[in-house]
Image 1 (cartoon, rainbow, N blue to C red):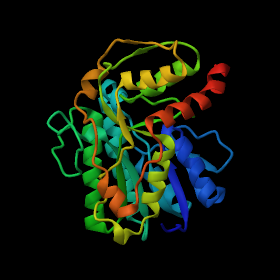
Image 2 (cartoon, helix red, strand yellow; image 1 turned 30 degrees about the horizontal axis):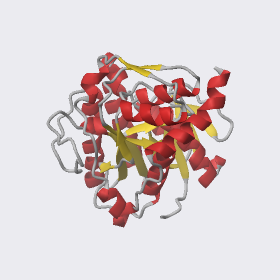
Image 3 (cartoon, one colour; image 1 turned 90 degrees about the horizontal axis):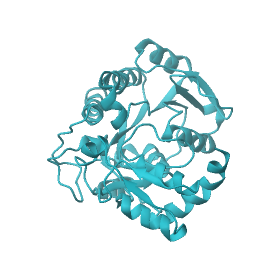
Image 4 (cartoon, one colour; image 1 turned 180 degrees about the vertical axis):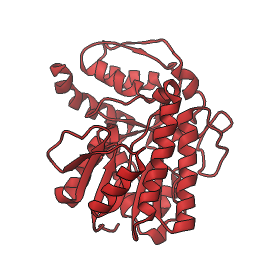
Length: 318
């Protein structure tokens, strides 16, 4: 891995991943090298902050130029479930926002850009198990369609302009610091929060809905490793598959019950079930392991124990 020079710009820094990735990058590179941005100026003291609407191309270019940005971490996006309720907004933020960030980055020599893609780029025709990078991708949600286009747009800027673009297809991410932001795998966080608070839970997916997942510490480690990997080592660019483990809601319920035997879940699938049914059960992460050393440390049981331990004091305050 290679330590990087210059200044980082993080879009969507107030979201689930951005909140914790900002802390990780500040700890690794220093407060004076990280600018955390979001549509509303982030309320944090550990680094520089700014309000930034990624759909405003001039604002993106201005901030990149004035602050001497050399690495953009582009996290701003509208996720799957929210995107189905606001498809026009999802298209605007996800596609036009990505275009604006790519154009601003391509205008700066030596710029590096990271963005997260998603398992949402897969669809009902995709194989369900151990899905390779190159496979059938026919997503059925606005979120999935926009992220698949962003993968291809990133590849275009790499080929045409030599921009160092890198991306991961993230699975469902479980974390406790920031509430989930409208994704189809949010049930996992909601279930753990309910258990930590001493309550029970009504799940919006069927008990047997198996999906690839990852705990936030492993996701942060993957992002940093990909950012710092030598460009010469990368065969792929914007579409690395990564996952730690797969589980279904009943698996998570059973793990929680090992710690809290009184916990129970009622299953009442809603419109999000149709989204989850189009996604794979597991991914082939071998390219990420081979090209830049991806590996996940947490197991399902280890994640559940750590989540409940960290959530307990937070839920007591709520």
